[in-house]
Structures are given as structure tokens and as C-alpha cells.
Length: 318
Image 1: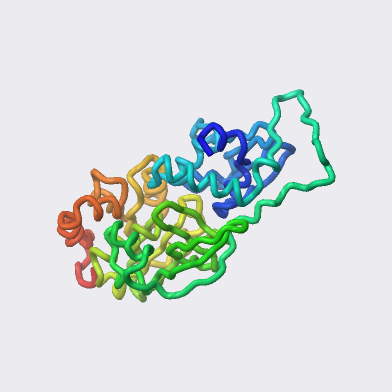
Image 2: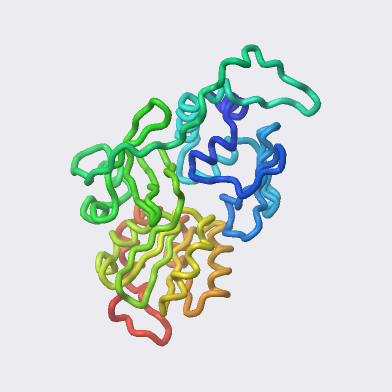
């Protein structure tokens, strides 16, 4: 499929469901969501018009077609990888037959109403097993600067299906049993979507957007696994779920992305969470911790050596 076919033939609502994102409410052809492309919010402001198959985020004033949205949600993927991801979804869901997009005021005749299109089944987890060395998955981790030793305690090799197609990815489980799934071309998640909390029995918690940043931080500072707790949002849309956990810790260290959504979330937390500190300046010229690790691994280790400095607090344990 090309980009034009993707925009015309895949329902945005199916795509969001595949990402573990469900509507907060439905009003006719308008489906309303908590925005998946901005910081967490209380009132749904992200609308998908199922008749036009267009989305609009009232909070940011942005909108468009499905490919625009997919590029925003899969920010680390290339254009070709997003095309491949959406093309696979179209095959699995029977989207070409199922989607009924029409201009306002026009009706589309159904040729054979007795035949129902294949429903979109989303991601189904088939098996999860320990990661093994010298596989495509661990080679992908190495490309991201992460060793098997660092990833193995927290990730698994997950087999999953989309429709009749079967795939394998690195799986990072959230607290509700769903998985964040990554391989060299795919970025998605199984339901239910949730945060991942990894307690370390310490008064400090590190907050990160995604598990690749979490693993990157451990790659750079292995001792953190025993001296700090971690909370991985798995999406900024999950930020509201983190507040209770953050409030239980004496210190909160922020490692959110260097983009508008990440900065807005950091500002909100700095204002509302006591003893909160933004450490994104440590990777100032990079989008996130993993991008710094991949681009400049030696520089990353030097920068992260002193990040535990906390005004009025000891460096011990960090």
C-alpha cells in the first residue's frame, strides 16, 4: 500500500484500537478520545470523525489523516516503517472492505449486505518467553545500544498475531498485563494499555515515557536497578495514572522527551509534584535518553555519571 491508499482505506478508529487506545465517548460519527499525542488531560479533546475518517486535536489545533497520526504516535519510526505497519494492519482487519468513508450528503450502496466484512481483531499475544542471545530481537536491542544483560530481567520475546499474521517482538509488560511491543519495524501495544511500575525499595523514582529510555538509563547506570524505583508511562496519555505512585516517593526525577508534549508534561509535574526535578538537560541536544545513547554512548555515560546530584540531598545511592 502507498500513503494515499492507507489514508483512504484504513479506519483511524481501528488503528487507535490496535494501539490500545479506546474512545472515552461516542457521539454519532464523532468518537472522542483522551489525546494520544499530547500530555494527559481530564476531558477528551481528541476527535475522530468516522464518516470522514479524519482526526482533530482541539488542544493543539492539529488534525489530519491516519498517516499523519501514525507518524506522530510512532515518532522513532521511518516513513517506510509506518507504511509497512499500517499495510499489515489493513490486511489483518479487512479494512478495505470494512471502511465506508463518504462525502457529506452522499450514500454508498452496499453491493452485498449479507456478507459482513472481517472485524478488526487487534493484537493477540500468543506466547512470551525469555530473550535469547544472537537473535533478531537481541540484535535490534544492540542497535539501540542496549545489552541482553540489561534487557533480560524486564523484557521477553513475545509472539503475537494481527489477524492471521504472526510476528515476534520485544515485549515489556505493564501492570495490567498488556505488552509494549517493539522490533526493528513495529511499534505497538496489546490491550490493556497501562503504566509499568518497577519498585526499587528506595525514596527516589525515575519517570520515563517509554521502556527503551528505561533500559537505556539502566545501560548507563546499572546500579540504579537496586537504588531507585522506576515508572514507565508507555505513553504520555497515561500520565494521570502515575500521580499517585509519584506522590509516594521523596524524590521524583523526570527523564521525559525533548518535544512539546514532553516539556508540557514536565512543567505540569514540576508544579504539582513535590521534590520533582527535570533532568532532561542531560540529553539536551537529543530527543530522549536512548537517542543520546545510540548517538554518543561514551558521552552519555559521562553525562549520566553526575545526574544524581540533588540540591540538599546526598549522592549516595544514585
